[in-house]
Length: 365
Image (cartoon, rainbow, N blue to C red; front, side, top):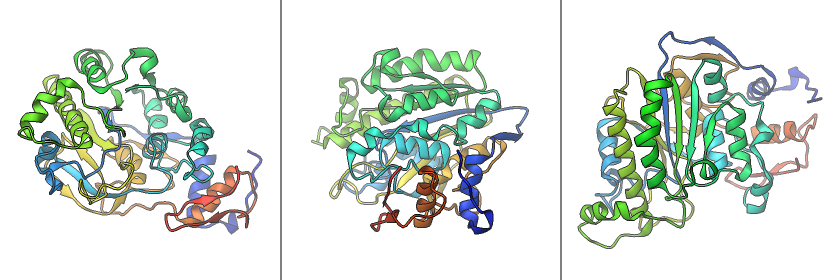
């Protein structure tokens, strides 16, 4: 990209960032028996609506509450700047890198950002494609915004959203996945990646009529906010999907399965839930409640480590959550350096300044 750097002037973090951009992705080792990967991504999902953690609605999300107590959960993951909208959260989880845009507080700037600008970044699918995985993405609604669909396709996914399956709400799409897609993948496409994402838990929250009877029973016909109702509907979907996966013979020996949110939910949630942390839940793994500090920059290193895949270059941030290490995440100097790279600047320009406690930066690209 016609960028010139004096390597002697770079910090270790800057060197790692530069390697991620400039080193061609390569596999170092792949197990002979490859596990499938299921990514169950939930819109705006965090720790709060899980009843096990919620003093206001302790009966909320009974299936995922049960997983929180009987499977492996990482429940102390902090949200980070440049990860708090769907495209950015998806990108950061897959690539362990921030989707830098010019002042994300302004929604118009997000609309003009495009994930294809980061097409050379090594990400989870970059390595899994090389390892021979069959990769599929099923997303409710349209994911054309900010180039997310193009990005996933370029990374090797066969990608299905509204324009292929015609579903704008969760229940019908997941019913199709449970009844048709998953059985076919298990029968004909192993090792596979199945990456799913819903829509109905996005503000303004929608609950399908199919879910309402069970929700009314769970809450004993008490009136609940739309947000709690919507998350209890995806909880039912997660239960039905997991039961089908088990019925088809998927388990921890052959499949890495993780339930997680794309980002924390927008807005103040006082009176609904207060502990604003993200979670990663592994339904097939044994009981372990892990409250070590972490971020979504740990997601990609964790997934590839748990699949026993070795690769280079290493991600510039994060580490395996199952290890004893604590992963790093971008600091203000890292953001300045990334802005400088993106703007093809040869130095850390004084025009680029981090301007608030959240770490947001402004500059030009």
